[in-house]
Amino acid sequence: MIQTKGTLTIQLGRRQVATGERWSLRRLAQAAGVPKDLVYRLDAGDARYVELEALGRLCAALECAPADILVWKNGAETEAA
Image (cartoon, rainbow, N blue to C red):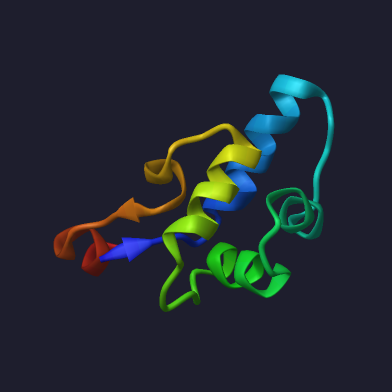
């Protein structure tokens, strides 16, 4: 299972530590050129799909890798949580 809940917030926090600039999810959507609804759904863990181009834009804006946003959780970890 792929999980995204909270991963964008974590990446925004890392970005803030690195640059000193605080971004909201809305500001991230603007910087990446993706719909804000997508960003909110991804961070809430409610997104059913994400286009690779949108994922690439988010990664470029956050200076991170796709694996930092899309986290794989195997069945045993998911059931224990």
